Amino acid sequence: MIAPARLWFGTTSHVREKPFRRSFKHRIAMLEVDIDRLGQADRLSKLFSVGRGNAIAFQEADVGARDKAVPLRAWAEGRFAEAGIDLEGGRIRLITFPRVLGYGFSPISLWFGHGPGGDMRGVIYEVHNTFGEAHAYVSAFKVPDVRDKAEKAFHVSPFFDVNGDYRFTLKPGDSGMSLVVENISTEGRQHTASLSVRPAAITTPAILKWLIRMPISGVGVMVAIHWQAFHLWLKGAGYRDKPEQREKRTTVTRPERTSAGASEDLRKRA
Image (cartoon, rainbow, N blue to C red):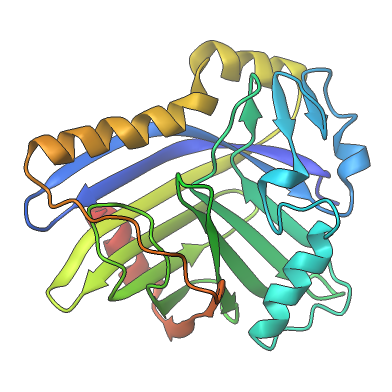
C-alpha cells in the first residue's frame, strides 16, 4: 500500500512564446497526501504536520473549498460529479505545494480520484492565482497518458487575457509524474508551463535535506512569480487588470488522446 503521504521533488519550467520569448526553470518540492489518511500522515515525521505549524505542513484550508465546514472528500467528489465521475468511495490522493516554515502558495494542485479497485477515474487540476481565488478543471481520466483541453475560464496572469484554451498533458505514475499546461489563443500557443517530479518517502532526514537545499521554497514560489512578472513588465508585456472571477468555478475538460511520443515531444519543447 502507498504511504499516507509522500514528498515529490523535481523541476518546473515556463516558456513564454508571444509576443517575445522568455523562459526559466527552477527546482520544486511538492507533497502528496491521501485525504482519508491525514491522521496517519501526521505521524510520519517530527518535522511534518497536518493541521498545525511545523517545518513542513499541510493545511486543509489551503485547498478545495478552503472552508472547514466542507470536508476535502466532499469538495472533490462534488467536482468529479460535475464531470460525470463517480468514485464509489475510492481513494483520493492530492499532490500540492505545502507550507514551508509557515508559508506556502500552490499555483496548481492535482487531485487523483480512484475507483474502489484502484483504477484511475479522474483528475482535478485546481488552479490558484495570487489574489486568493481558485478554479477547478476536471478531467475524466481514461488512459495512462492523456491530453485534455478546456476553455480558459480563470484569471491567472495579468499578462494574459482570460480567453482561448488550456491544454493539459499529464503522465502520472508511482515512480514519477509530468504535467505540461499550454496556454493557447487564436494566435497560437502563448505560454507553456511544465513540471516533472519524482516521489520520496517522508522522513526527518529527507525534510532536513529539503530545508538545506531549498530553505525558502515556501515563500520562494510567490517570489519567483513576482520576479518573473517584473521582468515581463520591463520587456513591455501588456498588463491586464484582473476581471471579476466568474460565478462558475468548475470547468470540465475535453479529452484528446495522444501517444507517448507526442507527449515526450511536448515535454522537450517545454
